[in-house]
Length: 222
Image 1 (cartoon, helix red, strand yellow):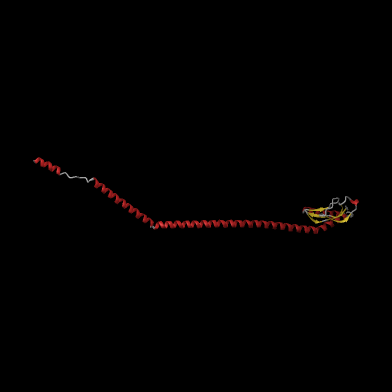
Image 2: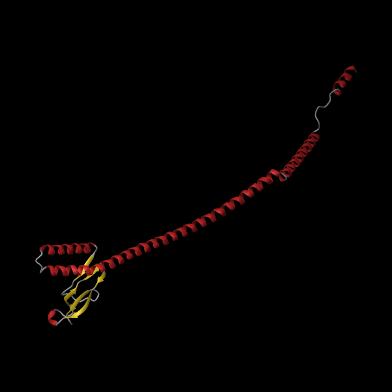
């Protein structure tokens, strides 16, 4: 009887140390739900904070202002390039006009110089004619110094005209050319070929292609 009681006391003294399985599961699910809800709440708060963050708005404004400035600079650069092209075109036109003006001025000055030279030489031609007559007259003179002096002046005069490009028009025996000669007398058929110059009464002169004085000639009739 004593042994039985002792055995019973030994078994009745043991207490369970683990919760039931269903309770553990319920507790874990409740904890997970609570954690999930807390995370969702935190995420929502973060989104709201980000949406209302003044720093983000300032970044957007700064970006917009930067884009506006860049657009304005691009427009200003395009306008400046267009203006530069316009000025370049204007400068090129001005340069071309100046070059044309300079050429016209040079041509005008050259023509004026040549016209002055022609007029001056033309005034000297009668003097040259008289030197030729003086040489002819001196041939009958016995004064040798006179002959040599007149001949020397004539040669110097002739050389000066030649250096200046003046040539004489003396075309005896050639076909009459009204651009070079004035027919003042008419010859006879025996004087030569019809339409030719049979005698030069006064030599003509030309400077280049310009006639300074037409020759006075006698022409054989055709």
